[in-house]
Length: 450
Ligand SMILES: Nc1ncnc2c1ncn2[C@@H]1O[C@H](COP(=O)(O)OP(=O)(O)OP(=O)(O)O)[C@@H](O)[C@H]1O
Image (cartoon, rainbow, N blue to C red):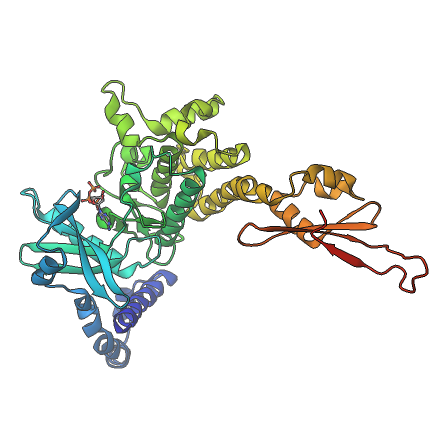
C-alpha cells in the first residue's frame, strides 16, 4: 500500500510540472531568467526546495520496494528449474512466491544472459521496469519485482498461464467470442497507455506481445521498446531515428518516415485483429515466402475491398461467427489498417466497435437461446407485433420476462430465465370471470401452465 501511494505521488508531481510547462508559452527556464532575484528566492526556497525535499527521496527510492535479491530469485524459481519461454535477452522461468493470498505463480525474465546484451539491452530493461512500474492496469502485465545486481538482471511478472496469443490463434478452442474479448482487452490496454499526460507508444504490438491469463484476459507485455512520448494537443508525433518492429506488424508510415504516433500502435492492433480472424500470425505469413513478401494486413485489406474476406477466415471458428458480428469486426479492423494515419481510429473507438461486434455475437449465442422456441409465432400473435420487429434478442428477452400481451390484451405470457438457464413460463389471463362470482375481471396467474 505504501509503495503504491509513493508511486502515485511521484507520478502526480511529474504530471503537474509537465502540465505547467505545456500550458504556458514560456519554458520554465525562460520564466526563471526573467525573474527578479527576489522572485528567484521565493521560487527556490518556498516552492522548489520543499517539493524536492518532500518528494526526491521517494523518486529515488520508490522502486526499491520491488527490489528482489538474486538469491530470492533463485529460490523462487527453484534454481531456474522450469523454463517457460525464451526472450531476446535470455530465458523466462516459472516460479512461486508467497503472496498475501498464499503461493502466487510468477514469471521471471532474465536479461543479459546472451552475449549480445549491450547498452540497448540495458536500456530495454530499464524502460520496461520504468513503464511497468508507472503504468499499472489490468490489461498490462503486472510487475511484481526486479533484480539488478551487477550482471544479474531479472524482471518478475505476474504469471500468465495461457502464454502468448501467438500460440492460440490457430486453436479451435479459442472461440470467436473469446477472440473478440481479447481484442477488446488489448484495445483497452492501449487506450490506457495512449491516454493521459505522458502517453506511451508501445511500438511492438503483436500477438507475441499479448499474454493470456487463466481466464483468457489479455495482458500487453514487452514494453521494453516503448516510448514515453511528449505528445500533446500540439505535438502529435515523435521522430524516432530507426523504425523498429517485427515485419508484418510495423506501421508502413513509420517504416517510411520514422515519424511515430499513437496511430502506429493502432495499425499493429489492426494486424493482431487480422491474426485472430485468420488463425495465423502475421509473422508466419512474412516468413512463408521469400519473394514477394506476403503481408497479412495487405492480404486482408485486398480481400475486404473485393468482398472476399470469407476465404481468409480461420476454419476452426468460421461456423460460429454471427454475420453481423463479422461485419462490425471487419470494419474496425480495416480502419485500423488505413494507410493514412489520421483516418485510423483511436484505441477507445476500437474498444467501442469491438464491443458492438461482441454484442451482436452474444445476442445470438446467449440471448436467442433464452427465448421460447416459438418466439416468432408468439410475437405474431401479439397485439402489436411491429414494436418487437427491430429489437435485439437481449431486449426481446427483457420484454418476454416482463410479459407479452396476446389475444387482444386478454392474455399475458411471460418467460423468465434464471442464471442457471432454468426457464419458467407463466400465462396469465387479464380477464377472468366466474359465473355467480363476485370477483369479476380479477387478474389470475397460472404458473408453469405452458
Ligand atoms: N508473464 C508471463 N507469463 C507466462 N509466460 C511468459 C510471461 N512472460 C513471458 N512469458 C513467455 O516467455 C516468452 C518470451 O517472453 P517475451 O516475449 O516477454 O520476451 P522478449 O524478450 O520480449 O521476446 P520477443 O520480444 O522476442 O517476443 C513469451 O512468449 C511467453 O511464452
